Length: 335
Image (cartoon, rainbow, N blue to C red; front, top):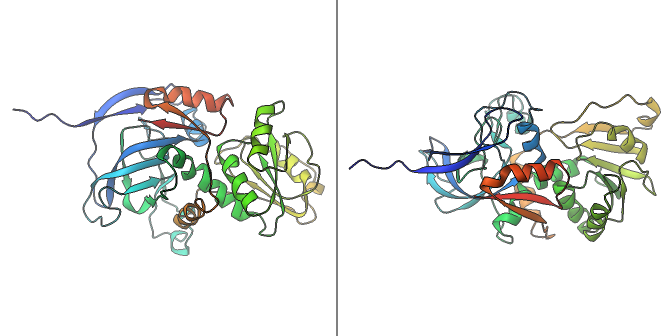
C-alpha cells in the first residue's frame, strides 16, 4: 500500500501586503547540520509586520514568517550532536551565518555578510514544524512556559543587546514604544536598580499604567519631555521622528539606541541636540552570546512576559492586533 507522506500546517505569505493563508505542506526533513523542531509556540514580532507589509525587501516567497520559536527537537540531520532529540530549544531571527567572513571571525556574526534570517529568508515558526540550523538553537530556561518564553527570543534578545549599548552607568533610561521588548527590558532595568522612563503613544493610559506596574518610575506620551534628563534612551517604535525627541531628552554624554530593523526616515535636527558628546547608534540582529547571556539572566530577574495567545489559523489577527497597537505585552501563536 502507498505510504502517506507526513504533512504539517503553516501560515504562508504569498505576496507582500497580502494576508497569510493556511496551507498543508510536506513535513520537511533536516539536512546536514539541521534539526526539525515541533513548534510549541512562536511569538509575533514587529519585524514580522515589516516583512509581511513589504517594508523589508526580497523575502523568500512563499514564506512562513515567525522568528520567536520555542520547539522540541523531533529529528536531527547528519552531523548533529547537539541539540539532541527531545531537547527544548529556541530559535530567533539570526538563522544562519557563514562563520568565515571578517565579521564572523571577529565574533560579530550579527553583521555576517552572508547571514540568513528566520521567517524572512528561511522558513519560520508560524507552522507546526520548522527546520533550523543546529548552531542557531538556544537552550531554554525551564522557569517559564512555552508561551511565556517565546517573546524572549527576539523582544527579549534585541532589547538586551540594545540595553548593552547604553552606557553601563546609565541610571535613568527612557524606553520609546512600550510593546513586547520594552515590557521585558523594564523588568531587567528595575531589577538592576535603574530608573525607567516609559514613552507610549499619546493618549494610551492603559500602556502608561502597564509600564508603571512593571517598575517604570515615570510613564507618559512620546511627545512629552521626561521630568529629568536621561542618561540613555532606547527606541523600539519604528518612528524616525522619535530620534530628535530622544536626543533632546538625554543629558550630556547620553546615547540614543535605535533598536528596530526598520524605521521611518529621521527628520533633520539642529546640531545642538547632538553636541556635548551625545550619540545615536543602531542595533543589528544579535549574537549567539547575546542569546546565552540573556536566557541565563531572565530566570534570575525573573522576567515575566505578558502574552495574548492566538491559534495558528488566526495569525493574521495577531498581526492586526500588533499593527493597531491593541496588544498589552506580546502576541504568541500556538499551532
